[in-house]
Image 1: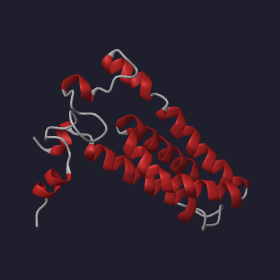
Image 2 (image 1 turned 45 degrees about the vertical axis):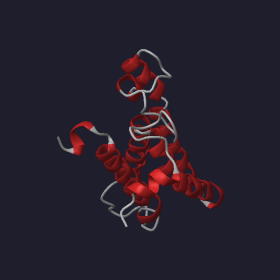
Image 3 (image 1 turned 60 degrees about the vertical axis):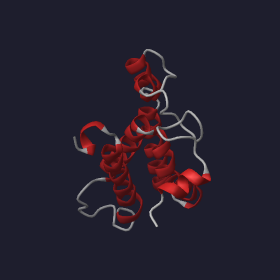
Image 4 (image 1 turned 180 degrees about the horizontal axis):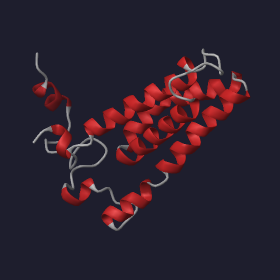
Length: 153
């Protein structure tokens, strides 16, 4: 089987790229254009796409979403501080949409596992948890020796 059939890595990459492109189109490419110009996509479309893709990324891979969104969160804070009213509304709209969709994370886990706080991965692989060390992952406990022995030199 190929990675895209069972793994969420490819889907997460697609959502990340869509979010980044929609954000850039909303706040960089679109901001430089005249509001009355014939832009290909209106800003409400790029705002909605950015918010939905980030929210879906939260549901799919929450820690990946945290890592992807952190620089854009900081950029959004700068835009809130320095931007005009239109830009501020756009930043808040992206955040609100992402928050609304991302807040379904616990409901999704409840629907899949019967418990909102149970990671679905742990239903099949008890070792598939966040962290390092004994009992996490298929390999023996993470030590400096184990990491050096698996590194290609």
